[in-house]
Image (cartoon, rainbow, N blue to C red):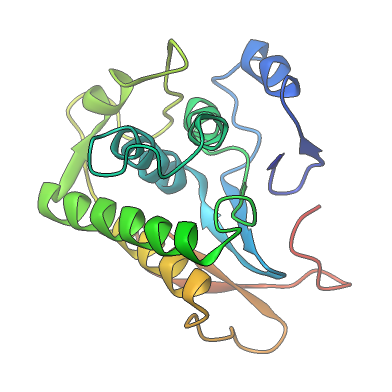
Length: 195
């Protein structure tokens, strides 16, 4: 299941409907990431880049057979849609062994992105997921963006899965993966994470 920031959740094959939409118009620039009733908001393009790297790495010899193909495909769907849908980690981290391997995978991705240091629009636009170009609204041409917001997002995911993510200030959600660093956003009435 993939949850769009302020919209209802979609399930496969519903993502194909999204894929046929005008992909130059973002659904939202935020998405939710949830695990065991906890969650936070994230910048969608940071999630898309992180999951692109994670899906490729999950299929590498180091992590082969750790994650079922349907989970890696979910990550590729989120990547393909430019992060316009959120991520529910309950299926990914459904037992202690896979949770540990997921933490190792995301930590390894974070280190790779930290070393990379930057990405540019041309490079990301050349990435393919599910046989299609990854949606990218970020920098055009050779405009460079730091990978540090993506590293920060990876760190927040690991902390949440391990139970170490501190609670946000009362009445707010964490908002992670933005160029200006972690910050909070006010909860809407009712305090729900996803629409």
